[in-house]
Image 1 (spheres, rainbow, N blue to C red):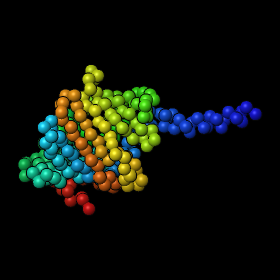
Image 2: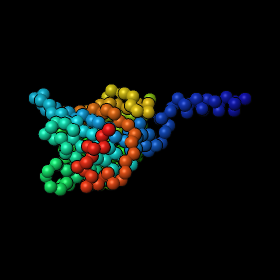
Image 3: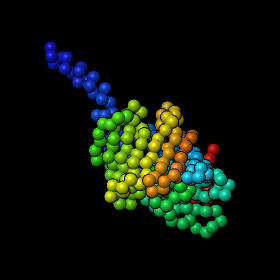
Image 4: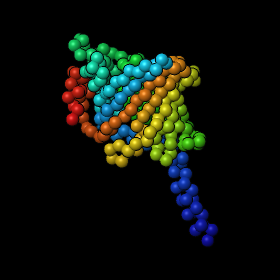
Length: 245
């Protein structure tokens, strides 16, 4: 009789524990897919706020394919319109209209000049760049301890708090190999996107290295779309804007 009682009880415990029982790397992959389809297009507004309250805003159209291909084009402001970026793995380029060939840029630079660096703006899936070493239950979800897979990744470690109701991040601390905090990313305003995907529509960042500064990224029209490989090439960079429907 006891055997028949124990089995349902174990099933109930497993259901209640939900994502908490999920393997950390499996949870990280789930977070990636809840944030974006593997191949997609989206629009983003980036807002850089300085200590005196002044702001500078940018609007970008972005496409991504698979694990390592990302391209964007600036739509606003008019002074930046047409600037385009390409990321292939850890290699990044910036193309400025009527200014020769695309130039190489690095993950720690920023094409918008704010707290978001190029790795944040042209972000790959977290599971592509990081592996989860461990996890622990914390207030509000699960804390994933992530380690960069290679030395080329912008941050050596991430501490990601995952809301286990929706399996999306609520906060990420970006750390150097020394353990120094470089910046904190905060995810806000859950919203339903294409396909019923519920994810944060806003990501904010502050850094102890740039006190008083803040950068905000607002996501819109995140939707699945397939692209040919030839689009993610330096020759195609000046034509990224033509992909918009």
